[in-house]
Length: 457
Image (cartoon, rainbow, N blue to C red; front, side, top):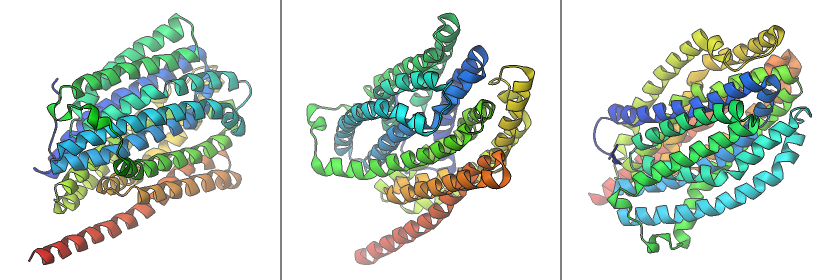
């Protein structure tokens, strides 16, 4: 397994995007596998209450992960552009400054997360009988934020250089480790929900170390002390790229918390059913996020190389691939969804039946609307790869407004199941903003290229 880089400024976009995204999909499958196993182990060994406790922390945990991924993905945009331009000296400076910013943000996020966890869970009206377990789980996960930041930064560095295979291998190692430790800690050592959290963090450590080992083998990334010297202008640019993406993910999570607040009022059985389907959310969008990473790298590298004509060509290919993929995944979920969901749910026959009814109905709604989500990921990633992270942030605000508005109003009109449409409304709201934004940006790029050609003539 060699640490290779891939130049995406040459060759057919369809082949480049698919071959880059395929290892990411496989890696995401393994990542989702250990998330799913976490949930299965907790649901089967510890029961419905423990499953609900895990679900009550979902959006708070996702908020922190989203902020981390937002910053690191923002930093990686500049890395991809420098790599595409062949400016390896500046690429190393970007990585050095990104590492320092990541370390600082890790400390801030640990402190903020631990201080805010209990007040936020109280604000969300988390049921008292699951509150202690929810707090224990989230405190352990927040204490491990530096580990999560470490892995995500390294994975983003590799992806920005066109290397999607090493993150795959890292995820395979992490998944196997997490599954073994899940069973050992939760079932063997009887550590309960804390065992699931500890297993996840240990797995992340190993995946981070694996990525670091491969990065050190790349000659173009031989960093020196001078690369870690902070440069105000570069720091400003990295924050300009990363902050909107982090904020975008944070406000999306806030919308999710509002949904969780509404769900928490429907009782433990509804929370458990809702949680079971939410744990499959990652499987639903698994290819979408992979295509998103591929598009960011592809667009960033081609923009850096000055090959703007290839961006539109690549987007057409990405939209076709993404649409076909979303239809296939939706069909599989509709056919086998109940079988998969049954692995999360345990309890009395009455509890299982009631929980399954809630979970599958929600899964069916999201599956049917899946192409809308895939369109969102592709277009948002293209805009980010161009270097504009502000407009995607606006799409995150649209998500927040649509998600919270639907969550607060629709259940009052049609009952508890109205909450299931909050996610779909959020996707539609974001797509409207993104489609308009992409059209405007591409028009500006075309005008800019036309003006340059005239000046050259």
